[in-house]
Length: 184
Image (cartoon, rainbow, N blue to C red; front, side, top):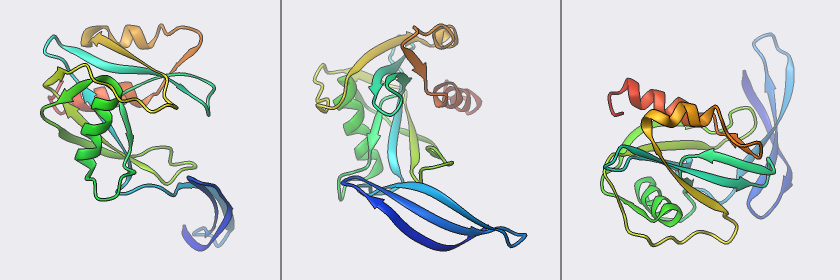
């Protein structure tokens, strides 16, 4: 596949809907409607998998408008501050959302966020030594509940969520990668 044309169909304050015309290997013309964020630096987002000294993973239960439900996910956010590195963004987002400080950030993986429709990518970090400071600075658009979960209870928890809560499937996927890398 190769892209032969890009056309902006809609542009909002933060998002842009782009029609990408592609040509397949069999010379078929295919039009994709994709979403691009306008206010990003680097790949798009950073995510932190934090582990307390008691062996607890830090998860968030966050309400998300697109799904109109709560989502279980790892803390993170956008790389939307000019001049800020991905690691700085990860530290800022992690502390703002959870009140914890990540003493060490280990880069784990850089993956497409939603490759069927969004151009954004997520950089995942592992924070094996976090400390609670208690100061959160959540955005007014964020409704977040912090969940401290013993690592050994993760899969049971994820398969027994309340009716109003859904799982970001990247949670067990990233935990599996961390296990394969010997970090968890």
